[in-house]
Image (cartoon, rainbow, N blue to C red):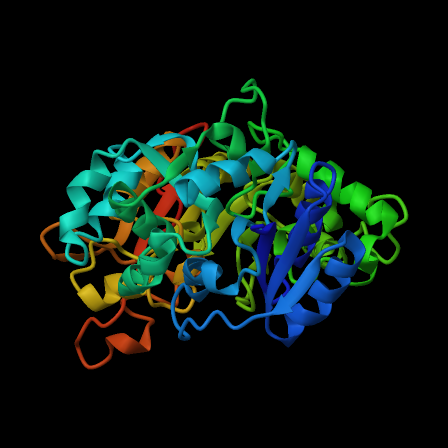
Length: 488
């Protein structure tokens, strides 16, 4: 008799709380076998506790994917080697199970491979077709069929038999494009037309962001892109938090001793809300924000750096996401109160926001700026003529934080986004479509940008080695006055 079971994969600690919450939700609807494939010592310690508390097994596993870009994504292409089951349902840790899942096993045994669709997105749509076309030089024979396929897929919910032909060939194709955006998923999309499969309809992978809340019979909700603490999302934005609070109230797997365990979004949520019941050791007040308040209250003109990390400049107040999440109005209110900002600075922050979050952040920045104030934004430049530069900074590229990049702007797209929020835009540094560099003199006192023409060491000896796309987004004055700051 063939064995059936659900697997999860975990490495590190950042997804551990989400893993616990997902398995806890699964156990409300499924009492069969569950195994956690765990990589690394940090992961093993937490996964043992989670498995014991949820009636799961855990397995120390080496996915055998060579170190490099997108290793965690590519591990999915090796699940058929790690699973202990003949028929497997694999779930991402940021899923929430809301109904029975047993049907999937039957469909998988009939079709060998099942994968969930992504909302109502399609392969001939703008976003998915661009991702597919990026692979044209690697899998040219697969592109036309993939573009015509129809439903776009998401590998957060995938099921397979151990001998599924697609699984057998998946890794060797996906690793060719490991530096591309979500290589496992896009490669799977390219492979589907040539392999036996079944597409799981939207019930099995409701997007918390892109789906309609009125859709019936939801079985799995997917909080993709670290949206699990985002109350107010279109689909069940509060449901993950409610499940987390139940888990924390029971102190399941001793979670209150180790949360948030590297989960930055959860840390931010816990710092800015009332702690769940029986959740000792979580502080509601944020000492970092408390330290800012005197500086904000005493400043004649508030100049604020967002996403500062360790950056500090005289006369500027530095903030990070744990204090000021630029996409959440309550964070702006908690930080500034009734005060308004004269100048904002974000150097290489906005590329970490997807388009919807960026629109929200731009509107909030506009709201909390004084009239006549400015917002200096610096991001990687999508029109930079160097292919090496683009490969380094594009979403999923080879750069240190490129895996977290969500957009690659050029002067047109960044300006349009700021204008949409009500700003008037001044272009300071940028490359155009023809590969020409443009520079308008600007002063560091209005917002110092290290990765810029005159301040980046890579631009010594008369050559341009590294620049950013830099704009000033200006909130119009109530009564027009001369420009907000003098130019050199």
